[in-house]
Image (tube, rainbow, N blue to C red; front, side, top):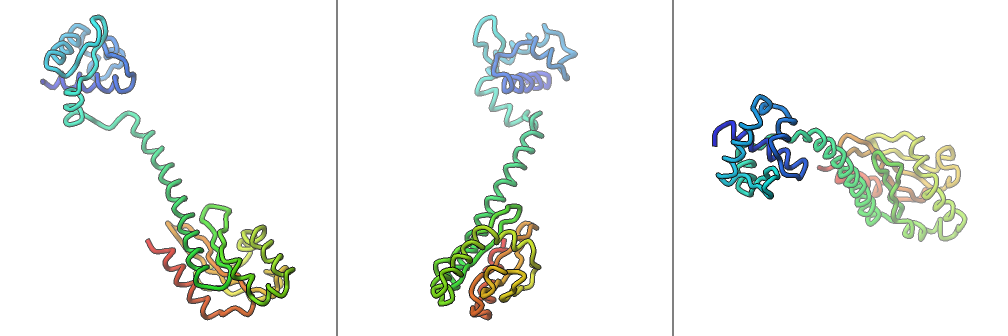
Length: 238
């Protein structure tokens, strides 16, 4: 196969991949490119040679040619170049990749909350980067604490804060790489002044989230601080 036949075969296969119809000389001349300088008779003659050599076949007498398995094999091995649709493919991949990582970010945040909730007798929570979402677990354990067991109204308020106000609350308090303590702060937690928050920022893929603990003011701050830092470190690990 000479260089002209190789270019012709590649052009036929590219056109066939796009149209799924047999390719004739007219299709190739309309497509232009390097083959535009050839006459229709020359193209038809070269297509006949490629057919005789087993790279193309003619489904019907009057139809154009389609690639054979042999034609595809030599195409992918020697002549294939990036598709004209490569830009679209890369754009689609970039979108799907970001969606993939966002799902992974959510999974990591949830798994970190699940782990933290198993280590403490309080509520563990975490926000998800780029998402107005807060995962929390451990409410049942927290409500067994005397402060909540003896005060059903307080327990109800805690549930309301978790379900309706926690995301907004976290946007209005200082959160950074240091462990921050909000202990019975009436300006931060007016509904549950007998409770405390421990919060810390975490980062994945350059994006920030918040991980923390909500519990009674009587919580074990030393224990909870170590638990929070250990889980945050794991959450940030690659």
